[in-house]
Image (cartoon, rainbow, N blue to C red; front, top):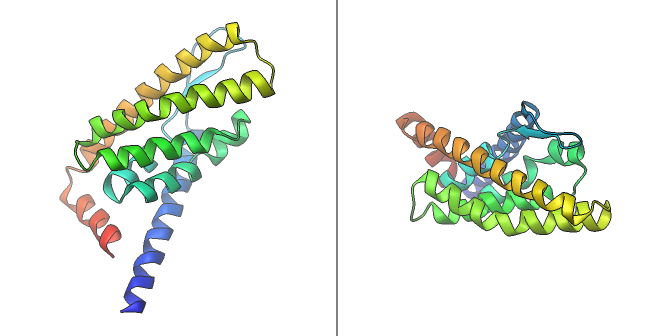
Length: 177
C-alpha cells in the first residue's frame, strides 16, 4: 500500500514539474501588443498549465504549478513576486472549479489575483524601483485587463481540452494515482 501511495505522489510531482516547465515555454512564446514606450506589453499563456492543473488535479497542485510556471517571466520582468500571483490564480481557480465550469472558475481565480497584482506592482515597481504612482496606475490597469484576457483565452482552451475523454482519463489517473 505504501508503494502505491509513493508512486502516486511521484507521478503527481513529475506532472507538476512538467506542467511548470511547459508554462515557462508558453511564457516565452508571447505576442507583443503595441504600446507607447517604455511600456512593453505581451500576451502570454504561461497560466494555461497551472489553471489546467488547478482545475483538473487540485488547487494545491495548481498553485505549485503556478509558481513554477513563471520562473522565466520573473527573470525577464525582474519582479520576484510574480510567481505568487500565478499561484493565487491557479489555487483559487482550482477551488472554484469544484462549483463552476473551467471558464468561470478561472475568472474567479483572476478576480482573486487582482488585488495581489496591484499590491505586487505598487510594492515592487513603485517602492523598490521608484516608478511614480501617476505613471504606474494606468500601467497596472492595462496589465490587469491583459491578465483577464489571457485567463479567458486559457480557460476556453481548457474547456476544449477537457471535452476529450482521453484527456479527462489521463488527468483522472494522475489525480487518483
